[in-house]
Length: 122
Image (cartoon, rainbow, N blue to C red; front, side):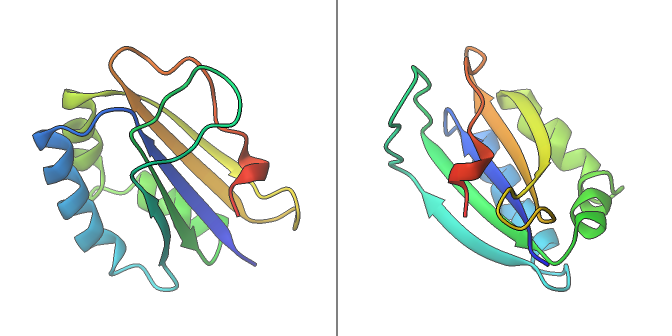
């Protein structure tokens, strides 16, 4: 089974760059973690949302993805990211396999108006 985390960034700020570097260090230690995509020029096909970046991570299962998100190691990074941006987070199952999950974190100033369709994240 595959589980995915997608991070969508509305604005890239210095604080977010610090967050990304520290988060990457933690993520690389997670067994089965894969960095699937980093797109700094995503093309939106519908809606008014204009993300500056979309990042997609893959985890081997739902529990590992959820455990990481709520871990003591990641908690300070959530606060760091949120100090520079507003975020909406979502953990959802990948439709095609009815098992894998997608955690979407959208950062924006102002708050993102729409939520990415998880069926578009492969």
